[in-house]
Length: 87
Length: 422
Image (cartoon, rainbow over all chains, first blue to last red; front, side):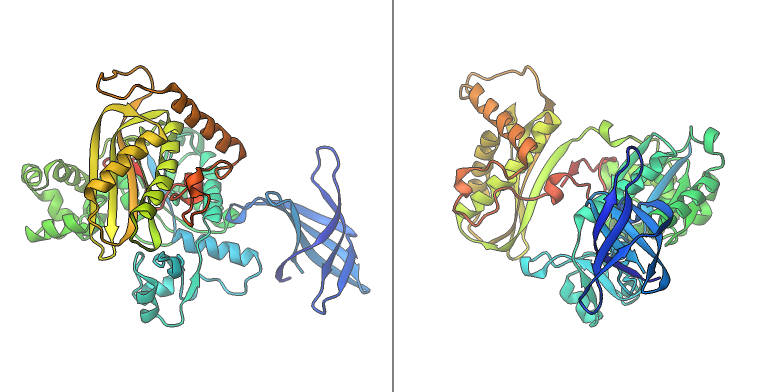
């Protein structure tokens, strides 16, 4: 996985006291087209504070074009936005 | 006492590097010739931090970008990001707070931590320091140097020994071997001027100074001589004081202008913008000042200043600005200016004070106006209410201070002789 840090549009559920759960997201791929991906499985979620920037990093798994792929999504708490962190 | 001094390694550059890596940068700027420097167009083009390869090329902090580029033509220049530095510094402080409640934030990238009472809970200081160092690297992404000693001075000297990412101890029995062999300039509180004076009398290492006669030092350098002699012998009985408890002795605010200021009206507007900020900070501290000073630097880099002692302490922006104008008129010789500064000292707490029959009658409305403006700015932002004089002017209405003055600078403050925070 490489760090991409691409801003994404995301559909997320917030449940009571729990951390936000990403459901679907879309990003613009290298050819300039929107790619919509459903988050099939969240394997692990860790809180990070690298460079003092508080964030939650979700390691997820999805079937993308018939292929099982691992990637990481990141929720930047201070900025209230989502990134495709690694893929 | 067990004191730790934690110092982030080439802080500004490392923090920028971590941030860039997190944003998907392919190279770590710590490994290439890179510097953090201000914008040369607005005449802030000095080196604030440099990477390891730059250090090897002979680039030093504080020199101009122009000189640095001559030494290293393919230099990567990164702009400073003070919001990021503050968040890194806060994260570092927060991590340290888990180990002791007594922490002094000496500057943006350095902290003193009193470990004396934490030893019972966390055990051996060396092991804890190792853990702190590893956690900084793992959780925050940058490395630190940690110095451990029986007082703040020795802890600080220890953390400067060998960089980066190291832990050093400097106990009294190690002073001779680890500290006395260092050149005199390495000692805390010995600067360029003191170094020249000491070298003239053949004091070249810290050991030379430690073995010198304290009376001789006192005669040569007054109380500062006594202080550095004590430091050379590892004597320092100052405690680690959390920042909220530090008595601030002075406030200052200054700016290097983007172009030379030649007009009196423009200079006064800049001074007003500087006074606005410094007076707000004075009132926030709940103090009144009775010494106002103005300092100027000309286009020929000649510096001079002028000050006035007031008979009655004041805290009003307009009133302070009146004195600033008077001082400026008295001392300015008409040459183009590149730097203007306003500083306040000799504070007194707010409260009842002796008034003079020679003064203008005090106007309670003016005080109320200042308080109201402060409250509006606090609630809606610093630029929510401004003086009309700045309406059609190119001069920034509030000047000086990074992050609106809410920023701890690089150099450190609050210990011994350094009282002010610029």
